[in-house]
Length: 119
Length: 108
Image (cartoon, rainbow over all chains, first blue to last red):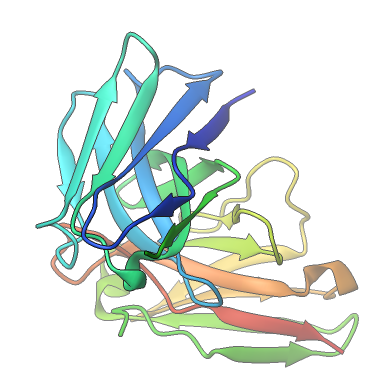
């Protein structure tokens, strides 16, 4: 059974960098695509970006200048770094596995982790 | 604003059929996937591709596509189907991914 678990700080100060890690079990990150999605309180889902099995990344153009997604295959983890955060980055952050069939299919999701940006 | 447009609120009487739509230019080329999200929970995949359901998703959920519109149909809606529904696909450039704004389904 595939499981994903996000981890990271729940509170980050404005202008700092938030770093989140997704630990995957039941599947190898050397296969598939792996993505981050976020959801501000009371709002909709926003795709942040992905890293694929070869380490290639792709980011939401609106966040590209502040986002880095990387992986650690030895730990079967992938990570998100978002720098220069503001209150607008307060959201639940989800990691997900993605099947690719000409379009993305997010078939397994983590439970999400709330990141609050506040001084 | 999202490149995939959904009506923000949809309602259906218990046991009736409801269509939740998703419009966008990219849908003329690419399929959409659909996600159900209940309060406080992570989204779950309900429909993908032409009209495929993951294991465990009830048969009352189905998908279809026409022109620039993808539709999620619930035939015989149940109280437990009350949730937010999001579509997702590639954007109009094809290079990135995008979610629709979401539709809140109320079962009356």
